[in-house]
Amino acid sequence: MDLKDRYFTVLDSLPDYVFIFSQSGLYIDVYGGEECATGFDCKPFIGRSLYDVSPPEMAKQFHSYITTVLDTNQTKVVRYKFDSQNMIELPDHVVISQELWFEGLIKPLDFIENGERTVVWTARNITQRHWLEMRLKELSEKDDLTGIANRRSFTESLLKAIEDFHRDQRQFSLLMLDIDHFKRVNDSMGHSVGDEAIRSVAQLLNNQLKNSDCFGRIGGEEFAVILYDTDLATSVLVAEKLRRCLENASFDIDGYQVALTISIGATEVLASDVAIKSILTRADDAMYCSKNLGRNRVSY
Image (cartoon, rainbow, N blue to C red; front, side, top):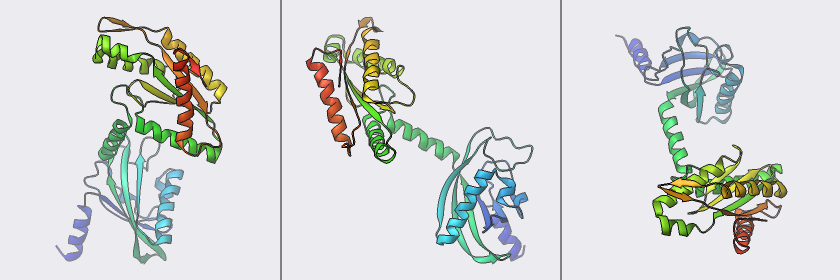
């Protein structure tokens, strides 16, 4: 085998795809991809444009990556996916049954092809890694007991809500909720019943909220809700609905009939809220007002 054949044999045995693109988005060369588990060969793309083999929006996005790399003369790392709605042109026998995620490393080259500058684009199949990362992210954001947002995740959502309010004037309200006399449940029925009661309360309240609301557990028996696009008057109505729902419920847990109520504080975002402390303090003060007024009520 001469040196040239050996060179191309090595390139084609690479586990990741290696594409050479021109500045206009033309496939100059394609190598490798044996271990990308895609079931298709991209060599037929050679001589064709991104716009010939990809959906328009995808081709436009990919082309912008190439342009950026050449304009900045810097390597760029991108992450992208293929699925049944967003896929390059495939042979008829290839069926994609799931999303395929790739990480692309795009680097400028120092040679000209047909009068155009070029880049090398290495594409690695990271589908398994992507779903593992998503699963770990989900676990890191969820409260272990209830499955709703944990304190850290809720705090991040509240920070973003304040940023969105100041940037886009997107209104929101905040509810703070605390289960009344919950210590009695743990003391008289045991912590396992208490844990199941917290889980049941979270599920019951979550079912009353919209999917767009952010519901989190921020303490032992304390919860909070971000009601997006909601003013104070509407948030009080939502809070009252939650209060009545729990007041009228009873949970059968390990032979105990557990009846609970909840105290709620409500507030809305103000122009002076540049951090989360002020809005949290107002909602917390309102919640303790409900406690001091006899519990099982909404204050604002």
